[in-house]
Length: 494
Image 1 (spheres, rainbow, N blue to C red):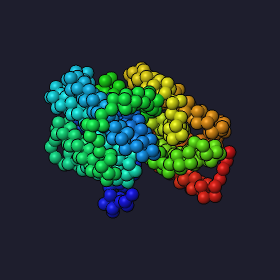
Image 2 (image 1 turned 180 degrees about the horizontal axis):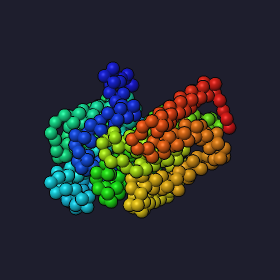
Image 3 (image 1 turned 135 degrees about the vertical axis):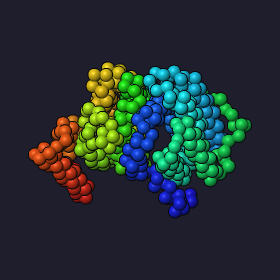
Image 4 (image 1 turned 90 degrees about the vertical axis):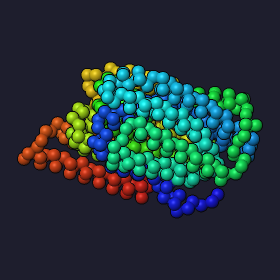
């Protein structure tokens, strides 16, 4: 396998959680103020809807990747081409069906969201273009699976990084001049098309054996791909999809303007989860290398290290969320303070840590089938609780609703299943790991409550605010120092 060029390495860097976090923090307030609440709300509502609709498509893509990797292991080039072709056809048909539904229902959806008449045609066109983007991404996802299965992970990272860079550049372009939602939708569709071309060029490096022809049509392979993909869709954890549920419900109940505020919090949570998994990614890669047959003691140690890494990242980010509180978030976006939103996110993240690690472990060792029923239950419960809680308690109620949905389903089931496989007591695991998280979170929650309750402060209140901020940052420093020291000396507290 060839080594990456310096340019490809730089592009790969743009696919990291660090760059995405920087782009999110740097661009969100700019785009909000340039586009206005309604236009920004239309964009995030359409994005949330796209996330809900293409969830099965991502499951089919993951299934295609596994089937391709199985063919690579036995060097079956005929099966390779068949899976690539049938996966492309299946996902293209499903993507076009979603695009057709959105195109036919765009006007009705705009009316249900209560978008003002002057903006309605532009918003309707953007929803139609979102459907076309889903179709294009679905069609190209099989090529992405093939690039990954071909052992071109570095090239894939460079292609995805280039796409991220283009998306950031488009945001700057939008923020510097006049634009319409229709124009933005066309630009997003163009980026997906360029992404597909880059994937095909990357795949050519794997050799001609990867590029199928219509002679490779095999309906039996297609049926297998469909059956396994449908099973994967019911077994995949939809934890991150619950944010899309909350944003879409908020748009229907409160309008796209307030849904946009919730979407900012949802994106921050996605980035938090992504950063935690990226930090622990090397450890999970090690779990995959040692295989399921390796003694449980070694896998148990690796899971503890991954949990520590996730707790360190999410702990620090939770402190920042509490520090921001609802008022700092509102000042950042220049909107009325959404009561309880910052506190709701701070409550959500601690509960998500253990389940994120556990789900990643179960998928790595091939035990994701244990998550099927509870994964579907989480989505349904999130919808029901959001509809019931968002009315009386607003956006903070929506975040607490998806927290409850997660805790009552995958939040306990995934860690319990993981601990049973590792022959480890769940109570012992929690006692050994989660108390570290409390060191940072408890003062942060108290500080967040204090900051959220204060108005414009003078004198004693201002001093109290400064004291709380200092306490939080000192806690973060102490927590991080203890964590680093523990890793260096190999502390085990089980």
